[in-house]
Image (cartoon, rainbow, N blue to C red; front, side, top):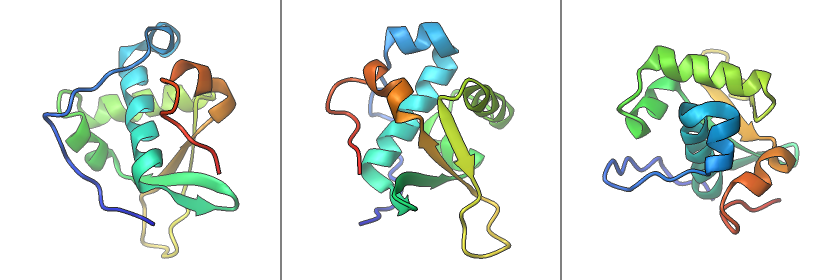
Length: 118
């Protein structure tokens, strides 16, 4: 079941120190937000959990960042193989990307029980 994105800017964000050491604080925050989205709002595509999100939607969840910073950080996380992205929209005009985590790589760096597998 897919739920809508909830923008709770008062909800505290926490992340793993180990993850922040490897990908930086901004990267750890984005991985955490994507993990939250995968837990709460994911869709299954070819047996994998994915979440649809635009840079602007991520900005709503991380209002202290800018869109260019989010874009650069996501690119870095993709290069480091912590996240993957794809355009999985059914309509050609849908430019939003879908994101998933490299679960084996991040599983030990996210609090236990935070992530689940299909």
